[in-house]
Amino acid sequence: MILFPYAKVNLGLQIISKPRGGKQAFHQVKTFMVPAGLHDILEVLPSQKKETRLFLSGIELPGEEENLCIRAYKTLDREVKTSNSKGLPPVDIYLHKNIPAGAGLGGGSSNAAFMLKALDSLFSLKLNPERLSELASLLGADCCFFLHGKSMISSGKGDTLHPCIVPELKKYSLVIITPPFQISTSWAYKNCSPGKHPLPLEETLPLPVDNWQEKLKNDFEPLIFSHYPVCERIKQRLIETGSTYASLSGSGSSVFGIYQSAPPLPELTRLFPDCLINITGTDVN
Image 1: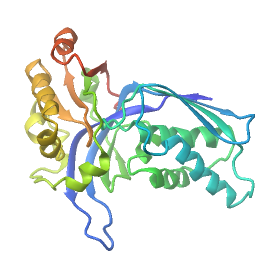
Image 2 (image 1 turned 60 degrees about the vertical axis):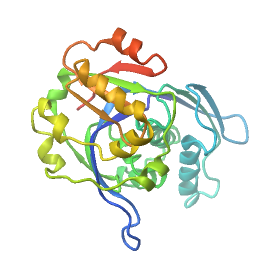
Image 3 (image 1 turned 180 degrees about the vertical axis):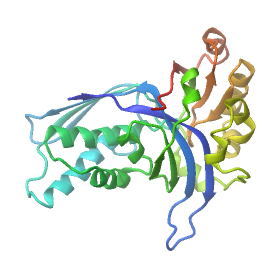
Image 4 (image 1 turned 120 degrees about the vertical axis):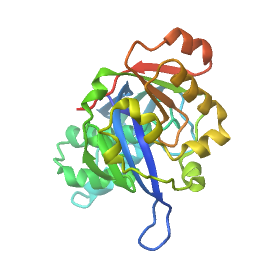
């Protein structure tokens, strides 16, 4: 079985509040997440071996943490063992990475979500969508988003989702520029500060895209830009080269711009020769 986990970008990311202990153990956020036309390749096959194996290719991943595909397998294995003591059969996982890690594009979360879907289909588990979402949320706050394949407003800790379509985005090309370094999600959340939000996200998105730059903010930008000034320079250059709207994506290192005309790839390549540059579209269905 071959699947194509997709990336996402965040159009606006509001940090509503930080954890206060007790009932609020997580940051409360609100963001508009849009599937981007950048994909990994995930193949899952029944294994002839006695243990599940992972084979990686493509962009190198940091090796400090257990891969989310393996975590997804173990999570679903525990679920199956509640009704079948044997659990899941072993599988071979082939993951080709095109989505850079630590970039705010959700590649790891997307891999985890698609791994759950692959195992559910491969072994005919027939999990209902609600249970699949519950399992995905155990793997990451934004994993649930990648089960749906459509743009969503995400709120709460990131796993409360409401479909939202901005048809005008279909007219635009998307440029994603990723510097050659990763930014730790845990570090970003530990050090971020809630922003001021005079206009709710739901009221900003229906405005003309030309109005977004001053109104649709990512609250991680002050922190990330102060520690990684190249990200701020990328955003400024995207605006200067004709991007209608440019922003940091999530809490990572990638900066994206949307262009109504053809993006100036030669100029961007000259300006940022060490960066990974992807030109694609958005999927707002």
